[in-house]
Length: 138
Image (cartoon, rainbow, N blue to C red; front, side, top):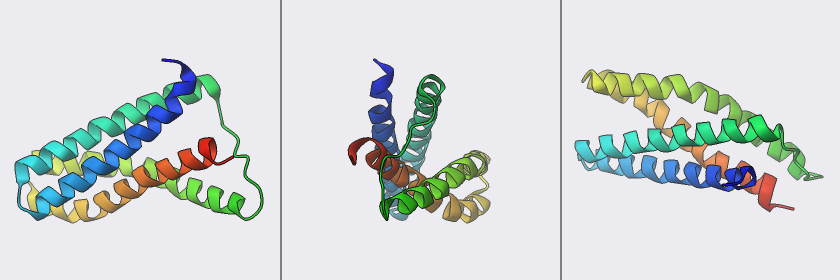
């Protein structure tokens, strides 16, 4: 695999994470706790693989310049800032949410998961949008 293939891989990992998160959410809504746990842990794996691939890519390529002009430029940077900020914040939230579930502290788990899930889903979906704006929108 070439380093130039990594952005597409990253987008696919973000999409996978988003799908797994939604599947996990649907399972817990249907009281399928074991399936929920499996989907959520799989989303963690997809997100971890994304992070590794992302770091490898940017360690080799550096920063990628956005070429859009006009009204789309501030839209892109607003999206990028919110995505990046929440991507950093989501890591301890996910770790805490998993920790609480593993310790069977489910009332605390549910309380933090109400924040973790939508923020994590936002980060996964906006990662796809950022990819599209950087690499597909020309």
